[in-house]
Length: 332
Image 1 (cartoon, one colour):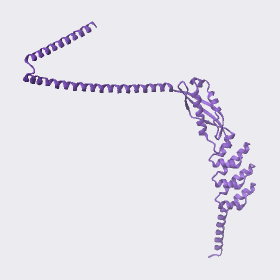
Image 2 (cartoon, rainbow, N blue to C red; image 1 turned 180 degrees about the vertical axis):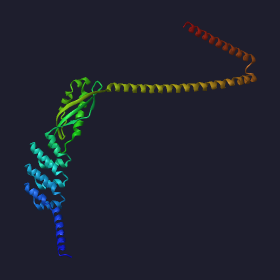
Image 3 (tube, one colour; image 1 turned 90 degrees about the vertical axis):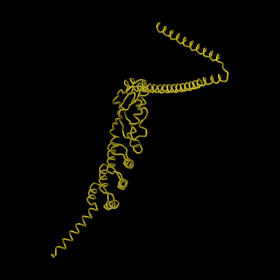
Image 4 (cartoon, rainbow, N blue to C red; image 1 turned 45 degrees about the horizontal axis):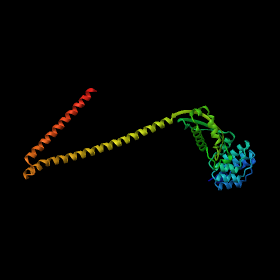
């Protein structure tokens, strides 16, 4: 084996170990920080490795803050990173706030970031207000006409209330509530159409931004449309409901009348059955009376004459009634 082969192996091993060491110790990052005016020790960077912190995620934002004239503590940046925050976004927000002359401390920015809000976007909205457009909100005036309103709400972020303050959904909901209240208080939909600024003034007076992360600057009515005649529809529905109730009650009365009639027919049929049964007993009773001598033959014939006379009178009365009815119809 040539004498230079072990030397090559030693050099290769040394190179590999040096590469591993340099990958663990961010010497290049330390040099960059040093020449950028950021005082961070090499052992501090090594300690970040042991704490499972990526040094580049801390040093680069720190360099950016230093160049912008901010005095930040590297320990606070590292603590924010370990808490799950976005260090770069927080530093960008602090730089933007400084340029816009907005008072924003690191602790406040870190709290906003950890609360899940975009702290840089919040600073930008604080400088440059944003417009929130509501969907079409339907409201009904006192005359029953539906009015659909779309509004544009200009808001500015309130840095002090970003932590714990309500978001855009609450602003939209409160503006919608104000629109419904204002339109509902109008005597006529024409009043709303003639003075759309009435909605804006009424809604702004309610202080709808209380407890939210925004400050409402203005509310502008973007569009107003006329919808359905809700009042007429409700009256129609009520009339239809009353009609159905009346029909149901009439059907109930008819059913009761039919049931009563059936009961009367049953009672009459029962009475007729009893009469027929009683009439069937008459011949047998007369036969028994004749046999026992309680009824004579002349009495029997007299009774027959009385019955025949009664039937004749009934026939004459019935014929007279029919003639009178015919005469009345002829006169008509």
